[in-house]
Length: 300
Image 1: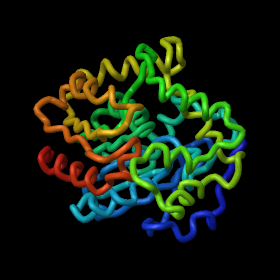
Image 2 (image 1 turned 45 degrees about the vertical axis):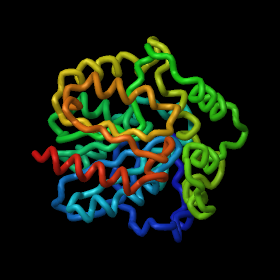
Image 3 (image 1 turned 120 degrees about the vertical axis):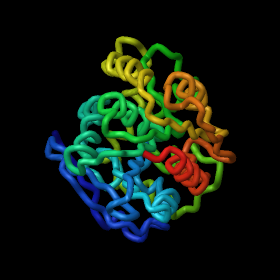
Image 4 (image 1 turned 90 degrees about the horizontal axis):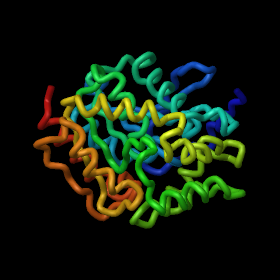
């Protein structure tokens, strides 16, 4: 596996993101980066980002969680942020990304009593981990995400996005993030989303991820996701569905999650107003407050 590592200086002077990175090995000669905030003995909240962002996405969420006494942990998925970047698209598979995060959370950090917060691919990966290792989790927050099996028709807007990522000679990361927000992002914030990718060689994961979402039942990840749904439908782990009011990509998944998972019953699921796909950007503090309230209402 040919691996690239983004130079550290690319991450100098990030706006509103004072956190120093930490690194752990996740096997395959790969190093995963993460940042954390809050007391080391606080209940762990695992914040998983998606395509094509990185832990910078959670900079408005982490301080609110930390102030509530929680330990907020935000890793960069392999291929994103400060984490190592396998340079070939074929190096990225759904199963590998699930395993890399598993090694990070359980083998390296030995997290238990975890509250998962998953958005976009953070949910596609995180919900698999909940299904496969339910004893590690205390709660789940699903935020603009889902767990496709290939049986469902994906939205037309997502299919256009997938085809754009696949065909673009130059992948404009900042443009993808900007298109998923309802608010205008300052130039320095857009630059921060571009920081992990000095040139096109570093963007294999960002190019690969849309193609890894199951869209047919013969997809390599379909059977594992179907099995995950079967397990999730039996779990009573408290689940908060905290979707925005402006995400055409994942909106249809909110009622599915509320109805399919027993842990969602009887919970007041918020709709995060004025936010797009990247609700952490548009309404990060609102999302964080909802997470804190959910944890307090469903204490272990």
